[in-house]
Structures are given as structure tokens and as C-alpha cells.
Length: 253
Image 1 (cartoon, rainbow, N blue to C red):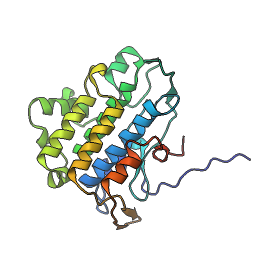
Image 2: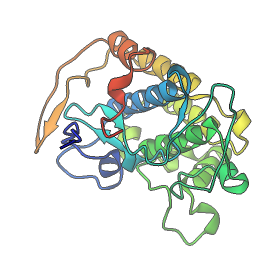
Image 3: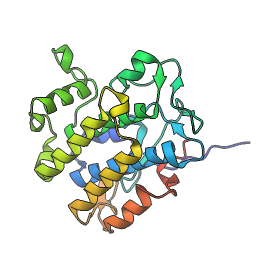
Image 4: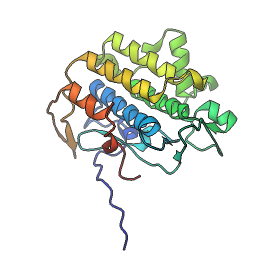
């Protein structure tokens, strides 16, 4: 009898730690940045390193799984599509999750790899703010987290919407740098967004500039956690830029 074997993911989804925070464990700035590096690296691999490019089409925090060391793995490829090397877009029935859905795709029904970039931008802003993609507010223009974030950037009030943990642990210049990258990912004109390869490269550089990281060896299962350490360079080589990035893709696919 054929069997499907899945990797055990004890820490569940990123959504749980961003939006349903518990007192047991809080996502630190270092872990948030590492998750962003890993997810962007995995998407870069799908878009530009595989022999046949793949568009995921439903990137969201609920589809990013965290293992026992809080390493990120992209899951749920039910909406994904293969494309040929010279194919620039897919014309399909609009599919995805509101709040993360690329508005350009919603209007045109044409999905490009920049649609995944937009969705990643929403996840990234969620890591920065701790807020859900669809906000509970009386103001219609602020219901979308992406729209609210872009308005905050335009009105120079970004720090008013950031998560307390980010404000506590990140330096101001780090926050501004990653926020500017997130803003580019959320550009309403898909052609003006960076590629996932560019995003992964920039995030890797930001993370490397912060200095040695101490979160690679984090173990947290069932209320207990331990920490170890490893060099940033080794992590980046294994995660963001290597063509051997398959471990970042969940075995669910």
C-alpha cells in the first residue's frame, strides 16, 4: 500500500507565533529575520534554481512551518504551478488568500512570479508588526495590512505600528532597511517589485551585517528550549544562496 511520509513539524505554523502569541515562547528579532531569509531563499529556489520554475501562489504565514529549531519550511503546494523557462505569467482563475493576494493578479487573472513576491511582503510585514493581513478596523482603507503599512511608510509613522519585540530588539537602521525592502515587495506595479532572488540576497546581507547569530541551535518543543550557536556565513550559504536548498521545502510537497 503506498504511503505518504511527512516530516514531523513540532512547532506548527508561523501564523501561530505571529498572531496567536503564547507566553511560552516569543519570536525574537533574530529569529524573525532568519525566517525571512529562509523563506525568501526557498522561494528564490522555486523561481530560479529548479529546472522547471514553480510559482507557489499561496504564500502566507499559515503555510510556513517551523521545525524543532524554528527553521522555516514552505508547505501546501496545492495551488502551485509549473511554468516554462520563457513563460512570463499564468492566466488562471484567481486563487489565493485575501490579505496576501497580489492585487495586480486579482484584477488581471494573470499570475507572475512577482505575485509570490507580494505575498512574501505581506508575511514580512506580519513579522515586523505582529498584525494579521486583514485588520479589524472601522476605516476601510486600513483593513488591509499591506495598505496600512504602505500608508504608514508614506506618512513617516512606521514605528507606531511595529511589534513591541521588534522595537525592543532591533536597531532603528535595521528596521528602516527591512521596511524599505518590504515596501518594494508590496509595490502595486509588479514589474517594480524585486525578484525573490534579489530579496533573498538583500536579506542575507542585512542579517550578515548585524553580526553573529545565536538562534540557529534553538530547540523549543513542549515548553522547553535550549540555544546553541553557529556562524552566520554558514547559515546563509546553506539557506539563502545554495542550489541545495531542498530542505527548505516541506516534504508535504
